Image (cartoon, rainbow, N blue to C red; front, side, top):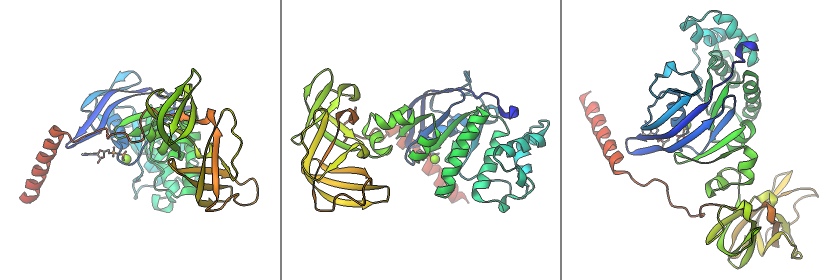
Length: 397
Ligand SMILES: Nc1ncnc2c1ncn2[C@@H]1O[C@H](COP(=O)(O)OP(=O)(O)O)[C@@H](O)[C@H]1O
Ligand SMILES: [Mg+2]
């Protein structure tokens, strides 16, 4: 594997903004991805992930900001001069070429010696060398995706960009490929920038996850850190699920803040709360919450809310998901492991829920945050011009 063991490069995005006619796709993006890391950019469709990759690959020019790869400013260099390769969701192999020809194609075109041995080496890495003489249509979707990966890796890019590369695969194959891709990254030591809208995929594969929302990064960190301590409403709801409560801080000690949420007292450790005064939103993950059929004794260091009514029970084998409607607090989601036989409560039952104070978190925004972008006059004007140009072009035909 020596062939591929070259180190990846750092990627730095400094103050990147990207405006399209009528639309700001990237707001103000600052990001440093250390060499050799597996970095995931996670966000919903339309948040600017592909645009970010296209900027790094040199397929789009930023409106503002600089892009550095391995410490070198590449903002003004052409796409093919950057040490970058991209694997897309649609892997588009050449159908008339064999697998080995597909993988060797880029090397041959650049007149790099030993193209075939290098291509075989890359195919061995994705465990497909035995199919080297086949044509793409004789391979399954998952195998074709692995060929696309080999075709990118064979160029030994310092930086490999992956744009939802597993999106077209079925769930089981997807999970398998996630593990394989992670293994390959560890083996080749290149820097991987992986883009996905699948939170489970991002968390399983990446060392670091950046959660993107509307063209900006909301929070970045190790998967467990992001999950256990989300800082914004968006992250709390996009990365897993959360029970959120808003209320005024009525008591603060060095150790904890207490909020009054519709008459219930909820305590959060000060160190886990982003804000300590005024109206704040606090939360807890559904698997940290315990469901009670009878009112439990008040325990120190535990939040207790209720009573409410169970409005939904959904049994899924290993666990049961309960929804408890508590007056003034809304629906509370509880995930309970089925340690006994079957669900412990039914729809219509009275219930309380409790959780360890240490498991709560306090957010920096309010659950009803305003939109980040408003209509932009100058870009709207450019959009109108583009539309006119397009219309006249169509009329000319
Ligand atoms: N060439 C373009 N012109 C105008 N708007 C664009 C262009 N490319 C992308 N966009 C817009 O920018 C936003 C981000 O797009 P994209 O980066 O493809 O999102 P993602 O990959 O996260 O789904 C979308 O709202 C999209 O419609
Ligand atoms: Mg995309």
